[in-house]
Each structure stands twice: as C-alpha cells, then as structure tokens.
Picture 1: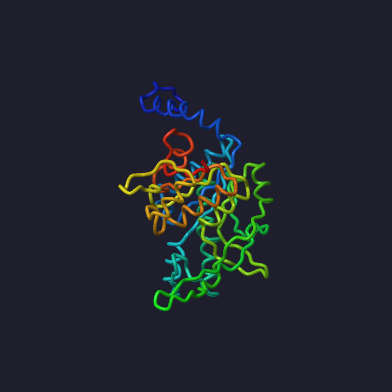
Picture 2: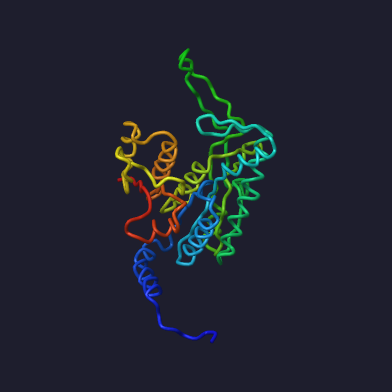
Length: 302
C-alpha cells in the first residue's frame, strides 16, 4: 500500500548514523563559502557527475555557500578535433589563437556550463551559469611566460595567444548570490581591458575566486588522490612551508606543481585551507567536509 510504514532496515539505520555523525561538521561549516573546482576529467562519468550535483545541493541545503568553477580541457580538445582545428600545448597550457578562443568559449560557457547547471537543478538546487565576463567577474590580462633555450641559454618569451590570467575578481555578483538560494557555476573565461576574451586555467580561476570571496575552503577536484610522498602514499595534510619544501626536493613535480601553487596562492590570500582530491570518487566533496579523515591532501598556512 502506498505510504505504508515498514520496519527500518540495517541500511536505513546505517544512513541515519552517518547523518548523525556528520552533524558536528555541518555545524562547523555552516555559513562558510566553499569554492569547488570541478575538473574536466572528473566530469567524464555520468554517475559521478550526478553524485557531484547532489553533493553541491546538499551543501547549500545545510547552510554552506558553494561556488563551482569548472574546467573542460578534454571536451574542448574533442570539439577542436571534430572541427579539424589543430591545437598545441606549451607547459601544459593550450595555445589559444583567435579561432580557438571562440571554440573554447563556446564549449566552456555553452555545453559544459549548462550540463553542470542542469544536473544541479535536477538534483533540487537552483544553479545559475555564468562566465568571468558576466558582471566583469574576472578581469584578465594576457598570460606571459618565458622559457630558456637549453642550447643558447637565451630566455624567450612564449606567445600563448588568448590565454589569460586574472588581474581582478569582482565578487559583487557572487556576494548577491550568497544571500540567496542561487548556486553559481562559473566558466573560466575572463575579459581583458579592451573587451578581449581570455581562456584562463580553471585551477587558477578557482583559486582567484576563492581568495576574492574569502572562502573557507578551496576544493580542487582532479583525477588523482592528492599529493603523494616519496613512497607513493597520500599526504593527508601539510603546511604551506612543507609544500614548498616538497616542491624544492622534487617530491611534488610535473602537473601537480601548478595545482599546489594555486593552493598556496589561495591560502596566501586568506583561504583557510585548500584541498587537492580525486573528483572521481563518489561523494568526494562530502567526504572531505563531513568526515574526520577528509578525502585528499589539505594544505593550510600552519
């Protein structure tokens, strides 16, 4: 019979216990702002994406203010391949010419952004998609990088095209959302002094937003468990000083370096802690915020 009450199962009792255990953590984080960087690879699995959307809605429901900043490298690459537009990388950054930046903006602000927004809304939230252009949220300038030629030892300036870096974050619109039930979902596209469109690394954009809004946490969802030590074991927590030491000794290397640097920059701007974690793990965000063990590598000032 519809609506009939039945005897609780062990599974239900276990879920009730989990909720009770999470209560102290919910109280601790209530009223805080959490910036979540949602990576391109972490978005590849439909089931994980659905869990992510539900987790974000739950954060809002218990009084936490989530801000989602997303990437989309694999999806951009797939679209460029479909359109037969050649693309290259320098030091992990996509060289973005005038044709490519139009595609980048279309994919990030269009299909990817709206997929995330729709998933959060289906899960019961009220998400609004936007880019760094909206409300002049992310003002940017051309990213300039140099590289030393190993043969001549001459330092050369690299031209990455319309790849940018944030110069100023205008949090006004995000402050407005914080006072409402709106969950902002941000595509990392910035606007230059003359209205130019800049493709910004999603990690960098998320760190800048977290610092500007005074976030308590920056959660960097990626496709690795976190920072590993020399034996391959996960480092659960470390200070800024230890993180810098591990970069100097080479324990932190390759693609992990820019992620850790983003965390260090965010903490330097006042973010309480930044976490690098595997976004493919089911309910990784909830594990990090609502359990004592966390879900990745937490970096804090001291």
